Image (tube, rainbow, N blue to C red; front, top):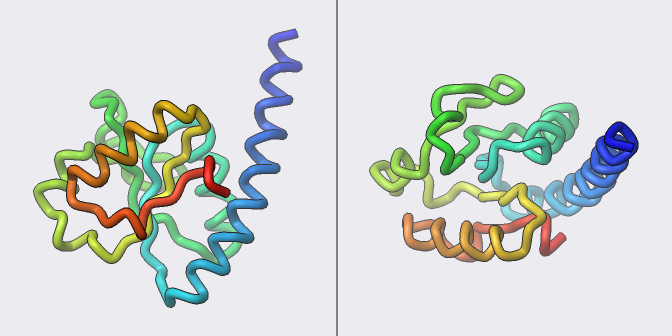
Length: 130
């Protein structure tokens, strides 16, 4: 049963990832934007960053609130804490942010956190609005 749940979750993530990838290709093409940051260093980030990479879209960083992830990598992408971006916000204002979390409450909180860090709402997307 646990294996079935895990497989179902992977299929759901992959399906969502393909939809996400197609929409992000359009967004990036229109904006001429190549700089992307993922927020949340979980299984969604792992799968979506791989799909993006395989399709020529580079994820520059991953942000996560969990200090245990700081300095680690997912698919060779460095995980940094939100405080790093707050200290260096001017370097990241043009980046697109993708929140890789499907919990509506968490996404709302992360969105607010990103706005408080100084990111523009127009540059923040999530799997929820794809």
